[in-house]
Length: 309
Length: 316
Image 1 (cartoon, rainbow over the protein chains, first blue to last red):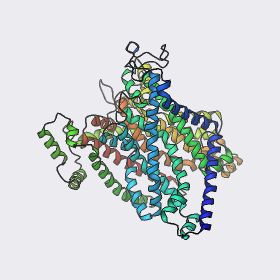
Image 2: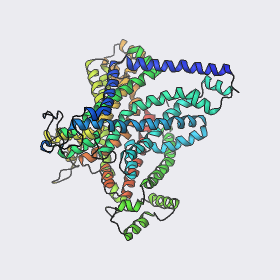
Image 3: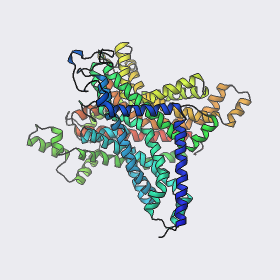
């Protein structure tokens, strides 16, 4: 045993104390803000809708009621109307929520899982980090949506390829956040103490540093989920993502394009659904970011801005 | 002098990035699953056609040789021939890039004007009714999917009220003229700019609120300066760098938005071309479009960096 029991204890108790404060601020920041609380509740409801869709949806999402084609919302039996193929829009929205959530959230989660070790190792070995970050700079030379469109176009349409394209697009952004946080963190005393105690590099990175750096990455991830949901739905809108006849909100918006004059509700309703979902994610993301940002915390105390920090 | 040196240093830094960009665009073709020539031409291509395309794309060469060839031709302005239109990609791209830049400029003007105006209005009336309305509206705007907003505006202003034309850059009959262009650009530009306006507004507002709570602002007010003068002359100046910075960051989002706006409003720009080329599996054309946007984007970032640098007196 190289690191004595005393050093180990000091490091771990410091970590525990720090983690509790972060959680405390998350709970207070998000939990005490009624808007953010409502938004979090809304996301939960949509998640429940996605899981329970087969049970609560009144119809099969692909069942055609041909006689009722293009009927507007308020049609008896079809509260949100019927689309151009005679399919019940409410049922399609409920079934589509799962696919929309998956396509928006999974790339962010996978991106964070790749970015955190990449950023940590990059910050620990400066020469390697320099190379990694210069490579990432190349990706920053593409507008986010453009890179995702190009990758999805060449890989071919489909949910899996779209998620891959989005992960490749997102990793550099998240890695930069982790890298910046880890570079600052490695100068702190507890890391110096761990090094002095000859803790193995990997243990310093993934046991000592990870909990403090992960917060930055998680907050960043939460603030971009909304944008990624829009991009994923946009890729499906262009025909590069989820393929029909699967119900997904981006595809539903796109399918209504040809019927805009006579039946605008076909495009309008899924778009409203996307907006509400993105709004909810943005509100929760903002509250989370504010609750963990020491500067905003100070400002919150000083002159309490509302909604926006 | 210092600005000039800054520009030169940034220019030096973007050259390796641009070379990396060409590598990414070149390698992206390798992502096409299976036989590239077969995928591009479709199942009904005969052996001779496949062979011709392979030779045209250089697919029979080792990858490194392919890249070197491609890069050397690229430097000379030769991006290959479009598979769908059989003419050089560069020739098709130039007018499309110009059209996209027009839409981009229109959107950027909206972002600057509204982003700036709304944030000053909101911050000057901090927690007043105007502030609350602006905060609420920008929350919604920031969450709107650009492709859906485009469809909504198209329906409301084009189909229902018939206030604006909703397709292309000029009228079908007797096309041309600045007046027609301005009439056609309004809705696509608003669509592209909406979420960026929201983001710029919220960040600049937040910065301006901080500035307006600083002691020197109180000192100005105490000397009897009017509220208007305090906010516009003394407050705004200290938030200009933030404004330019966040505005510059929006360029990337605007490019993403432009792609969708062009597709929805039939704007004959690079995004529309990219979409058509994807549908036609025109690989050299797709690569050309992506490359063109990336180069314009990198240069746009350079310009915005220089502006931020010039405005940010503390960093200098």
